Amino acid sequence: MNGEQIKEMQRRINQKFCTWSALVVDGFWGPVSQAKCRAYLRSLMPEPNPWPAADQASLRNFFGAPGDESRLVSIEFPYAMFYGTKKVTTTRVHRKCADSLLRVLHAIKAKYGNDESIMEEARSYGGIFNFRTKRGGSSYSLHAYGAAIDLDVDDNSFRNSWPMQSDMPLEIIEEFAREGWVSGGAFWGYDAMHFQATR
Image (spheres, rainbow, N blue to C red):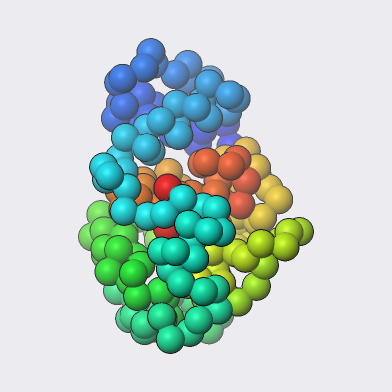
């Protein structure tokens, strides 16, 4: 995002989340902006959060063994998704995440279906189930459980910081937060393509 887009995001957080003192609208995304954004997103999440902690023991206890495809169900996307240029209409996701993910995607379509800048990101599908470990690690990815989705991989790569080098819209991140999902970009500062069903 550019400085003007970051300023607009800072204004949005100020308008919707008045618990803390207002963010300085300066287009700089430093520690104060990061902390207030995370607090704002946490305020949108259901209480109690329905998802497990992100450690492997909690994930196995909640989702079962990674790679267990018997726990996956097929869902139909509420709008056309594209993997590169290939149209994707269905996918497989962990059965405990299916209804929640569909609510997120239906909300994005209902609120932003006519906003091409948001829908461009929301339609770019990067995958859900992939039995693999985390990049650069030995523990299993949330994708190995079918409990994470990647969107717009090309513009929100794993190593790029959000929002300075990535452009995942806050509006999409908000809809995932309303279902308790964590955004990599907002909560870790990178990997903005990634949303996972953990606390």
